[in-house]
Image (cartoon, rainbow, N blue to C red):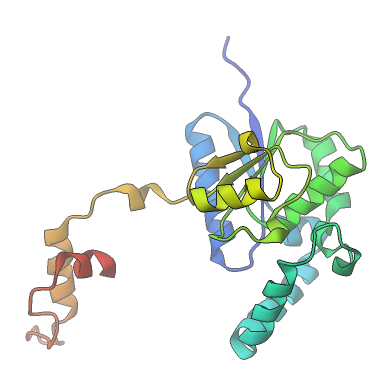
Length: 228
C-alpha cells in the first residue's frame, strides 16, 4: 500500500518576480519528490486582491520614482524588531485567513519564501495556534531583520555568511541550513558554448545577413555564457 503524499503549502507574495519564481521552483521539486504542493499568494489570496494590487502599485511606484525612499524604509526595517508596535501589525497581516486555510486543509508542512507570510504563521503560533512544521526559505542575499521570526522551525539560507549572521542573532545553529537560492534545473546544465557563440553571432547580423559590428568577431567564453 502506497503512502499518502505529503501536502505542502508554499506561501509567497508577488512583489517582484523572485519570490513567485522561487515558489514555483520549489513546487516543481516537491512534485517530483511525490508531494502535493499548493502555492498561495499571501497578499492576493489571504489579505485581499485589492490590497495586493494597491500595495504592489505603491511598491513599484516608489522603486521607480523615489528609490531613495525605499532604500530608507529598507534600512529602517532592518533596525526594527519584528515584534515592534511601530510595524502596526503589518508583518503579520493576513494571519486570520491563514489560520482558516490551515484548519481547512491540514497541510503537513508550510514553506514561506517571503517575510510577511512567515510573520503571519509565527504570529499564529505565538497565540497558541497549532500549525504544521514551518520552513522559511530566504530569497534575499542579506539577513534582513524582517525575515527573522521567533516561531520558525527551519531557515534555508543562501550562504554561510547569512547562516553565521542568523546564529549570531540567537537562532539555534541546527535550525539554519545553507541550501542556496532556489534555481530552475535549466541553470544547473552546462551550456553549449559553441552553440551560444553561434547564436551570439547570428544576433549581431543585419537584416540581410551581413556581418554585424559585434556579432562577427569571437567573444571570450565568459561573455558568451553570460549573455544567455
